[in-house]
Amino acid sequence: MDLLLQALLNGILIGGILICLTIGFQLTFGVLHVIDFAVGGWVMLGGYAAYWASQLLGLDPFISIFLVFALFVAVGCAVGPLIYHVRTSRYARPDLMALAFTFGLFIMMRGGALWLWSFDSRSVDSWLSGHSLSLGPVTVPLLRLSAFAMALLLAVGLFVLLYRSRFGLAVRAVAQNRDHAGLMGVDVKRISAYVYGLYTGITASAGVLLATIYSVNPEVGVRYTLFAFFVAVLAGLGSVGGVLVAGLLLGLVESLVGTYVGTRYSLLVVFATLYLVLLVSPKGILQRGI
Amino acid sequence: MVSKRPRRSLLPVVAVVAGAAALAALPAFIDPYSLRIATGVLMWAGLACAWNIVGGYAGYISFGHSAFFGIGAYVTGILMQREVGLAFAATLPLGVLVAVAIAAAIGGPTLRLRGAYFAIATWAFAEMLMQLATVLDVTGGTGGLSLPAYLNEFFFFYVMLGVAAVVYVGAWFLLERTRFGYRLKALRDHEPAAEALGIHTTRVKVQAFALSAGITSLFGSIYAYWVTFIDPRSVMGPEITDQMVVMVLLGGLGTVWGPALGATVLWLTNRYIWSSFGDTVVYLPILGLLIALIVLFLPNGLISLLPGGRRGGGVLGRLWRKL
Image 1 (cartoon, chains in turn yellow, purple):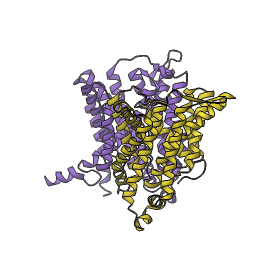
Image 2: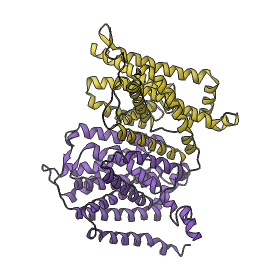
Image 3: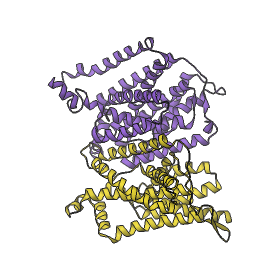
Image 4: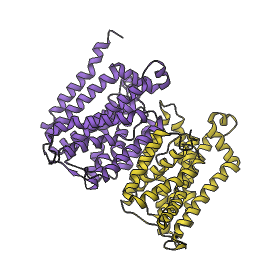
């Protein structure tokens, strides 16, 4: 029973970060209609940024996360227009070309990281590492709890921005209908670039948190791309609200399979579930996808 | 136009046969290392052609073709173990059969998904099979599987050459000269319209998917026997799919000869980088950059630069006419 409680708790704590990891991805899909294969790449780069911030500047990841966020918003705003250009081009299949483009970005990031930093795993230390709270039968590592809180803070911040600001109104308008939003005076190109920047910023921040809890190496990107896809598909592609449920669900599945079946089966179960969900219900378990 | 067709239509076959004949004489002139590279070019050309059937002609971007490559490799690998002891030639049709059966079985439900959903589903499927190969005993798990060694580079060169030539002539005939090819292109260009014209789109898509899977598996089988050692990452890893996709994009999506061109250019680049830098890690960022640049600047691939390319000649064609 204690084991079950502990597994559930770990699942929820990781699930919170997975929400943060996927929420920007969903927003990008909703606005740009692009599946971004590079999502895991942004996570990985965020992790490395936090590593270098702590090595070179001696910054704690919970402080450098704000710098990383700002840095990657800038990077994303620079990359966004390229993706917008491909997506709205006159190519025969702009959706597939955009997919191929982000696929190329992802290979570039992964290859670049392998080239520059080799296969070694790097861990980012925080002053919270190693401390934990005891709550009755379960122990709560402070690091994971703070990361969970930070992830939720980012997610809530995004929701506030989306639903309580003029910018958010414009974003939602573009997501609903690009042409009509354009006719109403929304600068669709600029909004798309900002949304992509927001997405890379929030995803890289999730990467900082994940690198602090686990560690970062060039191969983690594939895994997190998969996780983002999993959560996004379960939530229904483009549905930002569904991510809240689906993220927690993936955290719980991974934690429970890892505890009771064995960690080497957890990826197999995740992939199999993803495949089956796509076949049975491609609009997501809540039927809210586009 | 119609009266010209028979004469024109035989030209590619003649070209492939002549090209294959010229290549058949190649081993006499080059050293064993170059021969290995040539064998690699032929294999990748065949794989790119297989991917192009689904990705270029049906318009369904599959990110899971490494699964079928791995299926071929593992069927051959497992059946050639001493306990089973089948001959290499006997394992080839079995590998193809398994791959086609699996592709047909998963094709029905998977090909209902459009665009990005299909890409994610095939990717998940391939990763799932790779994880399965990692945990199963029969595949040797992460430890991999050794095959009986047959160290005859000439044999593998000629096998790859023969299979690749047959694949290209077959693909050209099927895709450009039969109703099957027209149906595929029709559903790629507008699926509901194709269906309204009475094309059984699901059946055509599954046929194309199974054909593509079978060819991919065939090369997987030969590859396994060629390198004599396989493990889940080397034959089912995402790099295999990555490479197929890039080669087709580079050469020209949805053209018969583009994949061969793309495969040749990319594989020679790969080997060149490998021999001059000592590892393939530098290759990955270049590969990624190449994809991004092609998508941005050359969406119809290298073949559109050649005279007589899709856009009536493209850049080089215009230059050519000026000269």
